Image (spheres, rainbow, N blue to C red):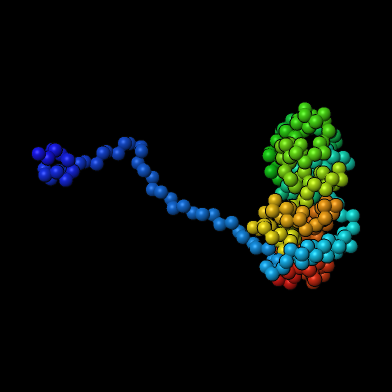
Length: 265
Ligand code: SF4
Protein backbone atom coordinates (compact mmCIF):
# COMPACT_ATOMS: atom_id res chain seq x y z
CA UNK A 1 0.00 0.00 0.00
CA UNK A 2 1.35 3.41 -1.00
CA UNK A 3 2.15 5.89 1.73
CA UNK A 4 -0.46 8.58 2.06
CA UNK A 5 0.34 12.11 0.89
CA UNK A 6 3.62 11.29 -0.79
CA UNK A 7 4.52 13.03 -4.02
CA UNK A 8 3.73 10.76 -6.92
CA UNK A 9 1.76 8.44 -4.72
CA UNK A 10 -1.36 6.78 -5.91
CA UNK A 11 -3.40 9.32 -3.99
CA UNK A 12 -2.46 11.92 -6.62
CA UNK A 13 -1.70 14.49 -3.92
CA UNK A 14 1.50 16.46 -4.13
CA UNK A 15 3.59 17.68 -1.24
CA UNK A 16 3.17 21.34 -0.41
CA UNK A 17 6.25 23.50 -0.74
CA UNK A 18 7.43 24.57 2.71
CA UNK A 19 6.28 28.09 3.44
CA UNK A 20 9.07 30.65 3.12
CA UNK A 21 10.13 32.11 6.41
CA UNK A 22 9.42 35.79 6.71
CA UNK A 23 12.43 37.95 5.99
CA UNK A 24 14.48 35.14 4.48
CA UNK A 25 13.30 35.47 0.91
CA UNK A 26 16.19 34.75 -1.39
CA UNK A 27 17.48 37.84 -3.11
CA UNK A 28 17.92 37.67 -6.84
CA UNK A 29 21.55 36.93 -7.53
CA UNK A 30 23.55 39.57 -9.25
CA UNK A 31 25.48 38.30 -12.20
CA UNK A 32 29.18 38.21 -11.40
CA UNK A 33 30.99 41.00 -13.15
CA UNK A 34 34.70 40.44 -13.50
CA UNK A 35 36.54 43.73 -13.25
CA UNK A 36 38.91 44.17 -16.07
CA UNK A 37 42.43 45.22 -15.23
CA UNK A 38 43.61 47.76 -17.75
CA UNK A 39 46.36 45.94 -19.53
CA UNK A 40 48.97 48.02 -21.16
CA UNK A 41 51.56 45.76 -22.61
CA UNK A 42 55.08 47.07 -22.62
CA UNK A 43 56.04 48.72 -25.84
CA UNK A 44 59.20 46.59 -26.11
CA UNK A 45 59.25 44.66 -29.34
CA UNK A 46 58.66 41.00 -28.51
CA UNK A 47 61.64 40.01 -30.65
CA UNK A 48 64.08 42.02 -28.53
CA UNK A 49 66.49 39.75 -26.68
CA UNK A 50 67.38 40.34 -23.05
CA UNK A 51 70.90 41.34 -24.11
CA UNK A 52 69.53 43.87 -26.58
CA UNK A 53 67.11 45.20 -23.98
CA UNK A 54 69.92 45.55 -21.46
CA UNK A 55 72.09 47.38 -23.98
CA UNK A 56 69.20 49.72 -24.78
CA UNK A 57 68.63 50.36 -21.06
CA UNK A 58 72.33 51.20 -20.77
CA UNK A 59 72.07 53.75 -23.57
CA UNK A 60 68.98 55.24 -21.92
CA UNK A 61 70.87 55.54 -18.63
CA UNK A 62 73.78 57.31 -20.32
CA UNK A 63 71.41 59.76 -22.01
CA UNK A 64 69.73 60.45 -18.65
CA UNK A 65 73.12 61.10 -17.04
CA UNK A 66 73.89 63.73 -19.65
CA UNK A 67 70.48 65.39 -19.43
CA UNK A 68 69.97 65.24 -15.66
CA UNK A 69 73.41 65.21 -14.04
CA UNK A 70 73.12 64.82 -10.27
CA UNK A 71 69.34 64.38 -10.43
CA UNK A 72 67.80 64.19 -7.00
CA UNK A 73 64.48 64.71 -5.26
CA UNK A 74 62.56 67.97 -5.57
CA UNK A 75 61.28 67.57 -2.00
CA UNK A 76 62.86 70.12 0.36
CA UNK A 77 64.50 68.46 3.36
CA UNK A 78 67.45 68.83 5.72
CA UNK A 79 67.59 65.38 7.30
CA UNK A 80 66.21 61.85 7.02
CA UNK A 81 63.20 62.68 9.18
CA UNK A 82 62.16 65.59 6.96
CA UNK A 83 62.66 63.56 3.79
CA UNK A 84 60.59 60.71 5.22
CA UNK A 85 57.75 63.05 6.19
CA UNK A 86 57.85 64.87 2.84
CA UNK A 87 57.86 61.61 0.89
CA UNK A 88 54.85 60.30 2.81
CA UNK A 89 53.05 63.58 2.08
CA UNK A 90 53.94 63.41 -1.62
CA UNK A 91 51.61 60.46 -2.28
CA UNK A 92 48.92 61.64 -4.74
CA UNK A 93 50.32 65.17 -4.49
CA UNK A 94 52.86 67.32 -6.27
CA UNK A 95 56.26 67.98 -4.74
CA UNK A 96 55.61 71.73 -5.11
CA UNK A 97 52.53 71.47 -2.91
CA UNK A 98 54.41 69.40 -0.33
CA UNK A 99 57.17 72.03 -0.28
CA UNK A 100 54.59 74.68 0.54
CA UNK A 101 53.35 72.72 3.53
CA UNK A 102 56.52 71.35 5.09
CA UNK A 103 58.24 74.57 6.33
CA UNK A 104 55.51 75.22 8.90
CA UNK A 105 55.15 71.50 9.62
CA UNK A 106 58.86 71.13 10.40
CA UNK A 107 58.86 74.37 12.42
CA UNK A 108 56.15 72.98 14.70
CA UNK A 109 57.38 69.40 14.73
CA UNK A 110 61.15 69.47 14.18
CA UNK A 111 61.77 65.80 14.99
CA UNK A 112 59.96 62.47 15.46
CA UNK A 113 59.58 63.06 19.22
CA UNK A 114 57.73 66.35 18.62
CA UNK A 115 55.60 64.87 15.85
CA UNK A 116 54.71 61.90 18.06
CA UNK A 117 53.08 64.34 20.51
CA UNK A 118 51.12 66.22 17.83
CA UNK A 119 47.39 66.67 18.03
CA UNK A 120 45.85 64.80 15.08
CA UNK A 121 43.39 67.61 14.30
CA UNK A 122 46.15 70.23 14.18
CA UNK A 123 48.26 67.97 12.02
CA UNK A 124 45.38 67.36 9.64
CA UNK A 125 44.79 71.11 9.29
CA UNK A 126 48.46 71.69 8.47
CA UNK A 127 48.67 69.04 5.75
CA UNK A 128 45.12 69.32 4.43
CA UNK A 129 46.12 70.76 1.04
CA UNK A 130 48.22 67.67 0.21
CA UNK A 131 45.08 65.52 -0.04
CA UNK A 132 44.16 62.32 1.82
CA UNK A 133 45.09 64.34 4.89
CA UNK A 134 43.31 62.19 7.48
CA UNK A 135 45.12 59.05 6.46
CA UNK A 136 48.40 60.87 6.04
CA UNK A 137 48.10 62.46 9.50
CA UNK A 138 47.37 59.05 11.02
CA UNK A 139 50.40 57.55 9.28
CA UNK A 140 52.68 60.43 10.25
CA UNK A 141 51.68 60.11 13.90
CA UNK A 142 52.12 56.33 13.85
CA UNK A 143 55.46 56.64 12.07
CA UNK A 144 56.77 59.25 14.54
CA UNK A 145 55.61 57.25 17.56
CA UNK A 146 57.26 54.08 16.32
CA UNK A 147 60.51 55.84 15.46
CA UNK A 148 60.49 57.32 18.98
CA UNK A 149 59.67 54.06 20.75
CA UNK A 150 61.49 51.48 18.61
CA UNK A 151 64.39 53.31 16.98
CA UNK A 152 65.52 55.80 19.62
CA UNK A 153 64.15 58.76 17.68
CA UNK A 154 66.33 58.06 14.60
CA UNK A 155 64.98 57.21 11.17
CA UNK A 156 66.17 53.63 10.53
CA UNK A 157 68.46 53.00 7.56
CA UNK A 158 67.37 49.42 6.88
CA UNK A 159 64.70 48.47 4.35
CA UNK A 160 62.88 46.05 6.69
CA UNK A 161 62.74 48.60 9.49
CA UNK A 162 61.47 51.35 7.20
CA UNK A 163 58.82 49.08 5.72
CA UNK A 164 57.58 48.30 9.23
CA UNK A 165 56.59 51.96 9.74
CA UNK A 166 53.02 53.15 9.05
CA UNK A 167 52.64 54.83 5.67
CA UNK A 168 55.97 53.55 4.36
CA UNK A 169 56.01 51.26 1.31
CA UNK A 170 58.89 50.49 -1.04
CA UNK A 171 58.62 53.76 -2.96
CA UNK A 172 59.12 55.83 0.19
CA UNK A 173 61.73 53.50 1.66
CA UNK A 174 63.75 53.50 -1.59
CA UNK A 175 63.62 57.28 -1.73
CA UNK A 176 64.86 57.74 1.84
CA UNK A 177 67.48 54.98 1.66
CA UNK A 178 68.86 56.09 -1.69
CA UNK A 179 68.58 59.86 -1.37
CA UNK A 180 69.58 60.39 2.26
CA UNK A 181 71.50 57.30 3.29
CA UNK A 182 73.14 56.72 -0.11
CA UNK A 183 72.01 53.10 -0.20
CA UNK A 184 70.84 51.76 -3.56
CA UNK A 185 68.39 49.14 -2.34
CA UNK A 186 65.71 49.62 -4.97
CA UNK A 187 64.19 51.97 -7.51
CA UNK A 188 61.59 54.58 -6.69
CA UNK A 189 58.61 53.83 -8.93
CA UNK A 190 56.17 56.71 -8.75
CA UNK A 191 53.62 57.71 -11.37
CA UNK A 192 56.31 59.26 -13.63
CA UNK A 193 58.73 56.33 -13.46
CA UNK A 194 55.91 53.86 -14.09
CA UNK A 195 54.70 55.73 -17.16
CA UNK A 196 58.13 56.45 -18.67
CA UNK A 197 59.43 52.92 -18.04
CA UNK A 198 56.39 51.44 -19.77
CA UNK A 199 56.69 53.76 -22.76
CA UNK A 200 60.35 52.89 -23.04
CA UNK A 201 59.42 49.19 -22.93
CA UNK A 202 61.78 48.53 -20.03
CA UNK A 203 59.46 46.23 -18.09
CA UNK A 204 58.76 42.76 -19.45
CA UNK A 205 56.45 41.66 -16.69
CA UNK A 206 54.40 44.70 -15.62
CA UNK A 207 50.72 44.51 -16.47
CA UNK A 208 50.42 48.30 -16.71
CA UNK A 209 52.17 51.48 -15.62
CA UNK A 210 50.69 51.20 -12.11
CA UNK A 211 52.33 47.81 -11.55
CA UNK A 212 55.08 49.37 -9.45
CA UNK A 213 56.56 46.23 -7.92
CA UNK A 214 57.09 44.47 -11.24
CA UNK A 215 58.41 47.62 -12.91
CA UNK A 216 60.89 48.05 -10.05
CA UNK A 217 62.05 44.43 -10.28
CA UNK A 218 62.51 44.67 -14.06
CA UNK A 219 64.42 47.95 -13.86
CA UNK A 220 66.66 46.45 -11.17
CA UNK A 221 67.62 43.60 -13.48
CA UNK A 222 68.45 46.02 -16.30
CA UNK A 223 70.32 48.83 -14.56
CA UNK A 224 73.50 48.63 -12.49
CA UNK A 225 72.76 48.85 -8.77
CA UNK A 226 74.92 51.91 -8.21
CA UNK A 227 72.65 53.83 -10.60
CA UNK A 228 69.30 52.92 -9.05
CA UNK A 229 68.72 56.09 -7.04
CA UNK A 230 70.01 58.35 -9.81
CA UNK A 231 67.87 56.53 -12.40
CA UNK A 232 64.80 56.95 -10.17
CA UNK A 233 65.19 60.71 -9.90
CA UNK A 234 66.26 61.17 -13.52
CA UNK A 235 63.21 59.26 -14.79
CA UNK A 236 60.98 61.31 -12.49
CA UNK A 237 62.42 64.56 -13.91
CA UNK A 238 62.11 63.22 -17.45
CA UNK A 239 58.48 62.32 -16.82
CA UNK A 240 57.78 65.79 -15.45
CA UNK A 241 59.60 67.79 -18.09
CA UNK A 242 59.54 65.79 -21.32
CA UNK A 243 57.61 62.51 -21.28
CA UNK A 244 54.53 64.01 -19.69
CA UNK A 245 51.35 62.01 -19.28
CA UNK A 246 49.25 63.85 -21.85
CA UNK A 247 51.70 65.33 -24.31
CA UNK A 248 55.13 63.75 -24.42
CA UNK A 249 57.65 65.85 -26.34
CA UNK A 250 59.01 62.98 -28.43
CA UNK A 251 60.42 65.37 -31.03
CA UNK A 252 62.96 66.81 -28.61
CA UNK A 253 63.37 63.81 -26.30
CA UNK A 254 66.93 62.58 -25.86
CA UNK A 255 65.61 59.04 -25.39
CA UNK A 256 63.82 59.09 -28.73
CA UNK A 257 66.30 56.83 -30.60
CA UNK A 258 65.84 54.12 -27.95
CA UNK A 259 62.11 54.50 -27.35
CA UNK A 260 59.68 52.15 -29.11
CA UNK A 261 56.87 54.59 -28.34
CA UNK A 262 58.53 57.64 -29.91
CA UNK A 263 55.91 59.60 -31.84
CA UNK A 264 53.24 56.99 -31.14
CA UNK A 265 51.76 58.15 -27.84
S1 SF4 B 1 60.38 59.40 -27.12
FE1 SF4 B 1 58.41 60.18 -26.41
S2 SF4 B 1 57.39 58.44 -25.39
FE2 SF4 B 1 59.59 57.94 -25.60
S3 SF4 B 1 60.50 58.60 -23.66
FE3 SF4 B 1 60.71 60.30 -25.09
S4 SF4 B 1 58.92 61.58 -24.76
FE4 SF4 B 1 58.50 59.59 -23.81
